[in-house]
Amino acid sequence: MKNKNIYFLIAILVISIIGLGMADPIPQDLNYHNFGDQRKFFGIPNFWDVMSNLPMFFLGSYGIWMSFQNWSKRPDIVAQLIPLVLGFGILLACFGSAYYHWAPDNNTLVWDRLPMTLMFMPLFSLLIYDFVGKDIGKVAFWILVPLGIFSVFYWQYTESIGEGDLRFYAFVQFFPMVIAPFIIWLYPKKVSYIKYIILILVWYTLAKFCEHFDKEIFNFLGFWSGHTIKHLLGSISLVYVLMMSNAWERELLHET
Image (tube, rainbow, N blue to C red; front, side):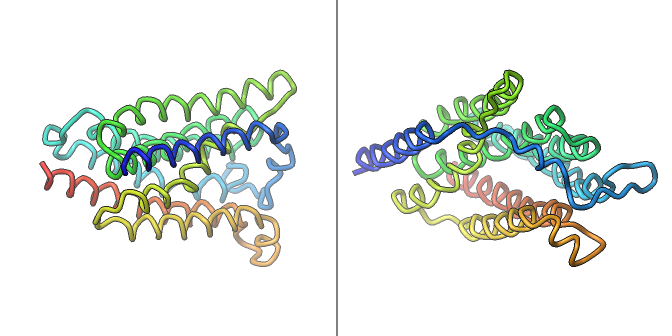
């Protein structure tokens, strides 16, 4: 039965890749860099979009600190590295996003997107490791993390030759969210962190909604833009990411 489940997941992956390949290349819309709130305070351009990344500094620092707790008690190197890479991803996202919003363009956007892959891919690896199987999860981690990083540099390269293509990066960002419910359904397991997955998705969806209506929200509120609020809501989502990681570790240590 479990082999059939693997084939089912592989089929979803293959169909998704084929669908992505059939779609036209997606260049970066340069209007994306034209954010609703471009006010400058204390010499900092786009002040609120820059400073609203600050919560990620504290969340990422906490995540890194937590990753070293019980380090030697975890069963393998991947179980040790998943929380560490995740914490570094959050911390680097603080600096990468702030750097991008200080001077928004395609070149600085690379350093905003790169840390994002260090959050998406460890979380995806965690689910595979815990639900599908530890051995598959270990392999997935060593493939997915470099793949996520490569997706950003692939996009950067295609932009540099005038053939911008975001499809690969979009796949890295959204495919885990598509397949995660299937993994949980096909490999039922009683874990305490399912509620955190739901809360992560809820807050992340709200953040993306605010990002989409960046200027409209700024025009309505007058003091914060949708993108600034996106950063803050995204930080709430990351609180639950860290809670999920901690709950996973507790259950992992209990099993061992």
